[in-house]
Each structure stands twice: as structure tokens, then as C-alpha cells.
Length: 436
Image 1 (cartoon, helix red, strand yellow):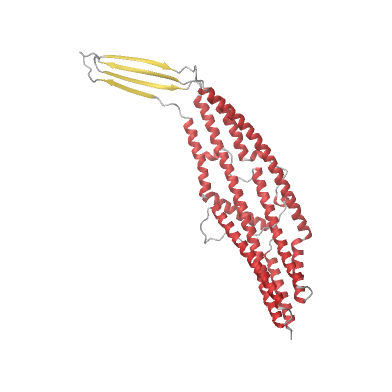
Image 2: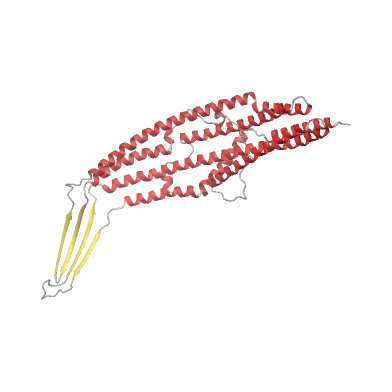
């Protein structure tokens, strides 16, 4: 017959190894886990760009800029006038016979204002595309960051659930030992308090994940609460080499915000020329026809304002200053981007180095082995309660720090993609926007 102590030890061993086997069963090949994660992320990203009303609303700015481009290319409308004098008119009256008077007037662009205006509007249209591309980049970064945060918190929840499940068995067995007089009830109470603390942490993490889920649903544009978001994905570390990311190959010209600033420079330079051309007034040409009784007259006329005093000097000065401002703004942005990318590369390198070291020493497996041995040692009486509780706390803390490090590592990679301009799928060309 087995004594209750032996039964206790056997049940505890089975409980511990059951948990460990479940953990190992759920482990995936790192490359497969990352592939599944990326596929799921891409699916929700595509859904968001087709259904999020805020995203679709921002896209309408391109259509508004297209309307401005059409307006800028339109020529001046002709002016037609018709006048008839008949009240009080007779052969014997002072005014004489009734008169019918018709005119036609056309404004002529002699300085090329319309063509230049169209160039400026074209730059505005290109800027609207670049600005939306920048919005697309920011939107995707926010979506990915929230998605990563949601999966990170889901990982912590799964870890806490597994731990709480093992604690339920441990508490029952500890209570059994206390009732038999093998240990004091104080020891049982301390373990129960430890479980209560774990439950509190679990509820706190669950609250955080619910908040992250709300933010993620807002970004995705997904309001159906009955459809559950993916929570079984895993945060598995892969190095930048394994992910195919080159930190030494960055082309900042791909940044849509920088591209928009360069278009802004071109736009302001063209605007200077537009203001200069507007200093030359448009020519007005016209013709007239008059019918009075049996007599008829016709003629032509031309008129143009003389730019003696107002030669658009103020607008030209303003346009030149705006152009210089845009040049300095672009230069400052280049310096900012360069510093931003250097900082991100350093952060990614440091976090990757730390994670590679953890992988090399097998941190997670070692941490798990120490926790298993300490728990079994406590059951057998080899370790006291203080050592056991400290071991449990250390095990949880190591796991939390590890998952947090992986989360921050991938978050930095997404920010690097964002900073290098490779995180937007909306092209900067005009052709695609015109075809929408």
C-alpha cells in the first residue's frame, strides 16, 4: 500500500510533467510560428485597409486634390453680352430708333498663367498621394503595434492560466498534508495567498488585453464582437538574419513623408514662377455688333490693365520665403530620419544580441528545469517554503521579462520598417491614384 506522502509525490510529479508536456506540445518550429503570425497579421491588415472608415475617409483627400487639379487646368470662360434699348424710342424722339447691341469677350492668357497653375496643382495632387501614403504607413505601424501587444498579453495570460492550473493541484495536495499534520496550516495559507496574488495578476493582464483588443478592433474596423480575434499565436524569437531583414540597407528616399516634402519644394518653386506670371495681367479681346433701324455696326476691342503699381510684389516675396522654408524643412527632416534610424538599429541590435544569448544558454528551458526541480524538492521536503515561493516568483518573472523582450524586439523591427519607409503598401506614383 502507498502512503499518503508517496501518493502526494506521485500526483505532484504527474501534475508538473503534465503541464510541461502541454507546453512542449504547444511549441512550434520558430520559422513556422513566425510565418503563421505574419500571415494572420497580413490578413487583418488587408481587412483594415478595406473596412476601416477612418482609413477610407483619409483616402478621399486624393479625390479632393484631383478636383483641384481639374479646376486649375480650365481656361477662362467667354463673356457674351446682349443689350436692347426700346423704351421711349421712336423715329421722332431724341434717342431715335430702338437699338440692339451684342458683345463677345474672351480673356487671353498671354503669360502662361494657366499652364503654370496646372503645374502647381499637379504638385499638390502628388503631395496628397504622398501624404496618404504616409498616413498608410502610420496606420499600419499602429495596427502592427497593437496586434503585437495583443498577442504579447495573450502569451502572458496563457502562462498565468497554466501556472494557476498547477497551483490548484498544489493547494489541494498541500491542504491534504496540512490535515495529516505533515506541515503546518501556515504553510498552506502562504501558498493560498500566493495563488490569490497570481489570480490578481492574471485579472490585471486580462483587463489590459481586453483594452488592447478594443484598440485593435477600432483599427481593424471590426465591430462584430462574436468573432474572436486570434489569441493562440505565439511570440517566437527569430533573428534579423532569419527574418531576412538587412539593417545596413536603408533607402530613406522610400519615406513618403520625405517624398512629400521634396514635392513641396518643387511646388513652392513652381509657385514663385506662377506669382511672377500673375504680375502680367491677362489680355481681354472682344467684338461687338449693333443694329439700329436699318443700320448696323460692328467692331473689335482689346483691353489690358497696366501693371504700374501692383506687380504682385508681395505675393512673389511670400512665395520665395515659403520656398526657402520648405528647403530648410526638408534638410531638417533628413537629419531627423538619419538619427531615428541609427537609434532603431542600435536598439534592435542590442535586443537581438540579448535574445541570441538567451537562446544559446537555453534560458527558458533552464528556468523551467529549475522550477520543476524546486517544486518537486519542496514536495519531498528538500526545500523549505521560502525557497519554493522565491523559485516560483523567479520562474514567472523570467518568463515575463523574456516575452516582454521579444515583444519589444519585434516592436523595434516594425518601427525600423516604419522609419526606413518599407512599411507602406500604397505606392507613391500618380497612375495608381488616377485609376481609383
